[in-house]
Image (cartoon, rainbow, N blue to C red):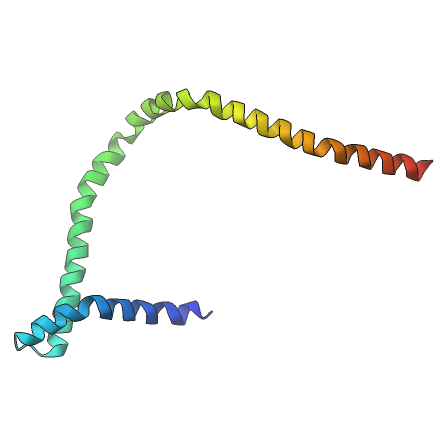
Length: 115
């Protein structure tokens, strides 16, 4: 419940620390502090929108080529499938070995109850 209050406050403090130098520079250029802050925020938002726009085209082409690349990826990963299966078998044997003494104890308790 407190995270809904603390997170925005922490985010505001971090943004203040990051954007304060730009606001100071704009203040030295004789812009009012509020105008400098608004300009700085708009520049940051514009930069983020520009980055998303610049990355959307390569992401779209990558997503279109993804169905072609999956078989190649599977072929490359087949090399490590053998060691992974061997490791899974060893883990399964270790789990069975760890459960074996407990099974004997359970059987002994069961036999002791019916004796």
